[in-house]
Image 1 (cartoon, rainbow, N blue to C red):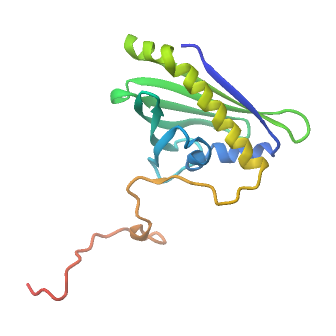
Image 2 (spheres, rainbow, N blue to C red):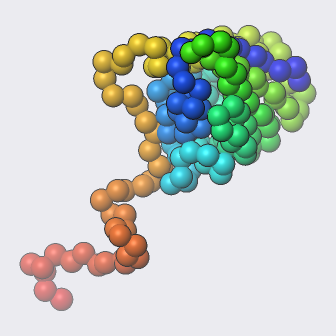
Image 3 (spheres, one colour):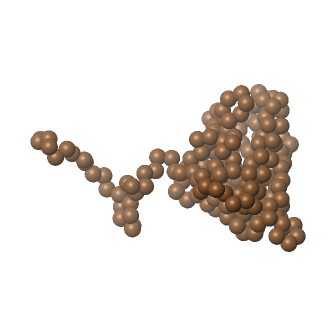
Length: 188
């Protein structure tokens, strides 16, 4: 299908914006208006190999998706591969390109290529999905610009690992052992 493109100009250092975009845990800070249930799939949240699962809240329902960063070329490009829809049958590629535009000005281009698996998926995308996704992408890039150009009044939201309990995680290289928690008052 034809690509969906959006761009924004941000007054911030390119390396800082790249580090923020290449960390999937930060995605909820600027894209939670159309992504819900965002959870990291792996402990490593930035760079190549980082992955996350989420639901895209479309006007007619919800589409579950999983994204993986396949290429991270600091400080200019991040490429993600998405699997979405029923059984992950549809695929898409998302590319963030960061280009310096003069002194202290940065252009962030977001391009999305999708490959619907069936004619029905292609029809759904053509009828309402493309226009809606372009609008949501523009809003997300505007929110990304505001993160860097305006001082946030609260800490930025970050995604967590699905099912990860930090209190039960191993510390300082020790392996996690399973313990049997018994009530000491019960005998037997």
